[in-house]
Amino acid sequence: MTRPAIPYALLLTLLTLLSLVLGAVSLLVGPGGGPAEIMAMLARGDGDIAWMIVGDVRLPRTLLALMVGATLGMAGAALQGLLRNPLADPGVVGVTTSASLGAVIALYTGASLAFPLALPVMGIAGALASALVLLALARRGGMLTLVLAGVAISSLCAALMSLVLNLSPNPYAAAEIMFWLMGSVTDRSMDHVLLGAPLMALGAILLMVAARALNVLSLGEETAASLGVSLARTRALVIGGASIGVGAGTAICGGIGFIGLVVPHLLRPLVGHTPGRLLPASALGGAALLMAADILVRLLPTGIELKLGVVTSLVGAPFFLWLIFRARTELEA
Image (cartoon, rainbow, N blue to C red; front, side, top):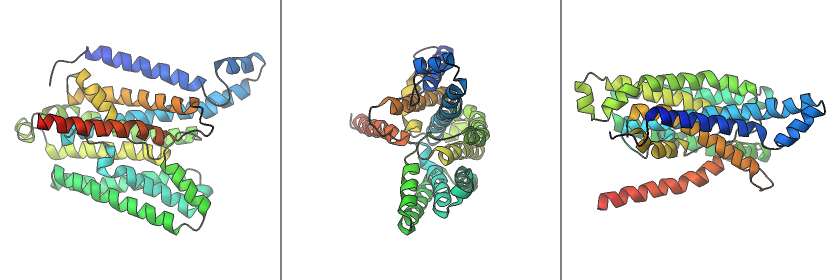
């Protein structure tokens, strides 16, 4: 742990203000008109249309980008602290693919057509199932066991999703599955927000409970154990919190990658490399980054709006390669 680059309270204040500004911008830009058009509608007495655009379309989109971004950022920071691996992200525990598999099954079976919330509900069920497996392993196995279990769960769920796509008799259903897997907060309602918010909040609480233990764990497992930190409890809190929160976000919005990898790396030097302090900062940073990415996809003149997961991957993949290159350079030095 080193001295923070800027005071911690100032950092959180700046990140909060940035998130608020981006949230306001998100409500005012996009299809349907900008601030001038919205004000013109209000002046003409078309308040219902203005509310439909801002309240029914943009507000759920903004809230989901904020919540999912915060969850991914905090989960990434917690997993990097737990595994003491700067390249870890929420995908390492397999919960992202398990949530995606549950949602894909809802699309394949047609359950999402019969019951609109079946897609996120089945996605959350898939995430919770993998979380139970990982929590059981967290009590008995070590860090390597958790990583290997996450890889196994991811591989199995990815194979099952490929099988579903292969067996899908309806090309339109297959296309719908592929578009959903790309990740997006478009065409979501307040029902989706209300469904995911309690689970993402629960995940965040579990991660914050583990914050002090993560600080001690940065000194090494033996030192942490000697200071009274329960490694099994810490693993359970981090794995459970990340699985529940990220699973809920993935179930509602699809796969949105690299937020949990990029944000903690950008903010870690600013908090003095303290894992516990990195959690709230990464939550605010993740919320700001995902809202900024969502604003970008609305403003890009691409004709067809890009999927949010595509944009985050285009930014995150080169960043990931740069991290690997830097780590290799440091080892050779």
